[in-house]
Image (cartoon, rainbow, N blue to C red; front, side, top):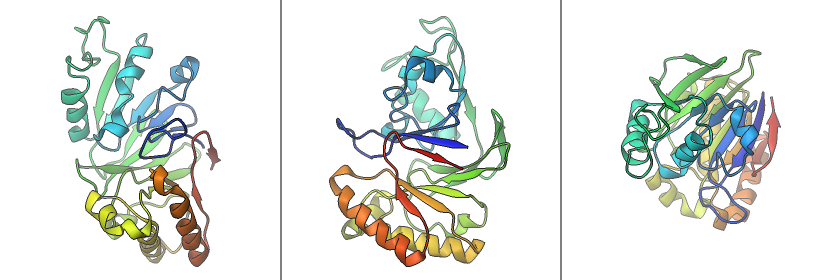
Length: 256
């Protein structure tokens, strides 16, 4: 399994991109920077897109992807709440065309919306997908994604603290997790449904208690203004737990 990070931040600039990553070039996860970081031929390889929740920075590139790939129909997989937000606020025939309808200007549907139920496994393009409810508004979910050769990652999506109830449902080799703010903004992180490094530490301690191991960890959704502080605090967490925790950056790849 090859994970390619397209966007790893919560704010966009010349040097930072909104959250999105690819698995094996064919499965996209979130769509903050899905088209701006890929060539047209690279976009053509994508067979399905998973969306963790309906906030704009995670769904933004869906209309552009639909327009760029109008010669085919691509699956967009999310909870019914997320799909409703996408349909009613973005591809709503006002802001953008209804790319799910044959009545659009393209005369065909270029997106197929596929609903997932939390904690019900589903096969998507050769991957075993498990949506897991997370502690974020708009009914946010994370995804455990397992390839045919049994490589498994878990992506939290945006999440706040208090994940002990979900750790028994998953057993990944890699966790890709939200760490948005540094420890001195812990209250803001909690209120907004995000993590800081100290919160991540507590969640990983609980994961190890439940599962008797710690997987590799990659941090995304980082606030660029606080990135040096977050990196320093994440290194301290990794050292204290004796595990590998990396800050993911745009353009990087991880191999499982």
